[in-house]
Picture 1 (cartoon, rainbow, N blue to C red):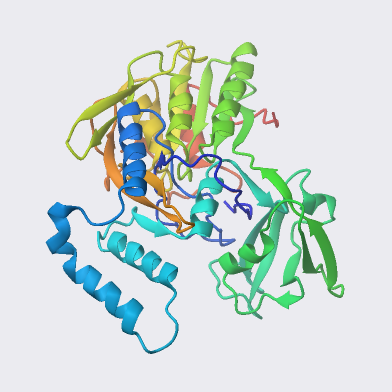
Picture 2 (picture 1 turned 90 degrees about the vertical axis):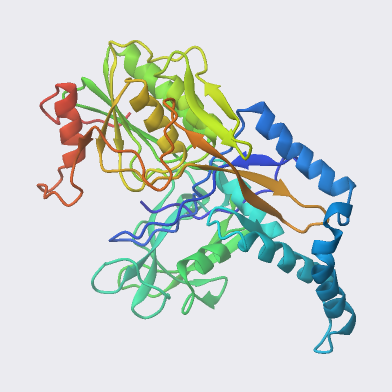
Length: 444
């Protein structure tokens, strides 16, 4: 599903935050999506691991230099650094750039796809991207092949258009008159030709209060310029409706920000107050978010006990238990969770917890399989930061699903043919819940 362009704000606290790293982007048919909703989750539970990360940051800031025990191992590094900074004759040497490159190379040498160095801007964007809000114009954008309407085209140009999928409700883009289907041919007077969609969206981003001008082609009319003042945009992560004549609550969660977790709780409260005792929680395509949000969502269905375990480098395992006061912990409330290959990290924490505790039936396809924990560490002097794998997470039954994923209790072949407008996974979920008809839809 296309995601909205976004621009992060400065992190609100200097202390390191622990999160799940993003999972590799999934290519889809139709509109090419910009996976800006980075598939990471913040490991805010588990005080011991969090504090060890804080201590790491404090130590590197107050005791710079090479430890005595590692002086010999670092001799080649310092020899190379001095040679570059003192003797390189090919031009001026930017020491900050050299240091950033050294850090980047050190972390890349681990060969871990979930550990990486981030520049100051990348670090800022990543933290903002998982918070459920961003600074921008509020428009979902994608790439579309001219004529066919197919996606996965790049770079933008004569045969690949940057298209507005839809403006977010009550966003600056919508208020400025941007419409679904508009073709963006220029940004601030510069053509988008030759750009990737990521590069184009990066130009549309910007701090609150600043202005961007989009050149729009609508239908067969001549191009027009639309000026938009950027603002803070709240992403809509929860989509609700009712199924089977209003008897089944359907809640789709697209990310795991703190706002999204709160919206899930409020949606469940409304459904239970309306007398619904059957729930479908759709986590398909959900790449993750904050682990604290995953704990909150799972705790709405699980009254007590572990939601997941974390295992650090010393193989010490610490349980993160359910929060009290869940609104749907009554066993009489039947739950089905939908998963697929795009369900990762925080989505797998929730699905795995509900499966292991017998609280829900998983329906769909095998999940992605992301079972490691990343700690985020800011660096001093505006040198960015890094994320580093520091632990594994396991399901309540201590299963490690990394690179294997969760196996659904009821598998639905994703290639299974379906009638127009029918979702075979939801149909199977309704069968599991004993609801036989997909009727009575309404927006909630």
